[in-house]
Image 1 (cartoon, rainbow, N blue to C red):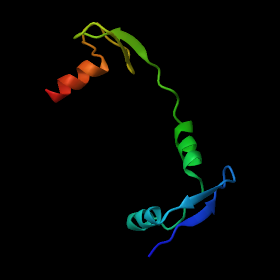
Image 2 (image 1 turned 45 degrees about the vertical axis):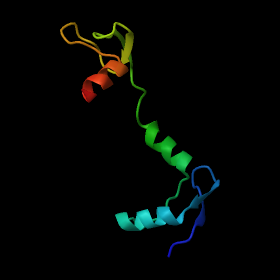
Image 3 (image 1 turned 45 degrees about the horizontal axis):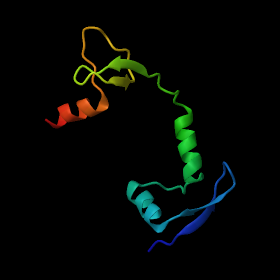
Image 4 (image 1 turned 90 degrees about the horizontal axis):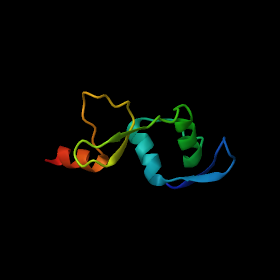
Length: 91
């Protein structure tokens, strides 16, 4: 029912393909307008409003390795590295 379409990005001017699958997805979601930006420009536009997260260094309470976390660690709460945190969530 749908066929691939070649569109031109209004941001960078490059051509990109609006695939049949993407068109079907847009129709299912009720979107009436075709995309006006290529995937790269859409991603850049979405992430431009977000500032980079400040990361903090702490010592993992389980294994003792250095852990980088997106919050200010507190003395009264344990901090875990990503590996230890993942294993705690599984078990």
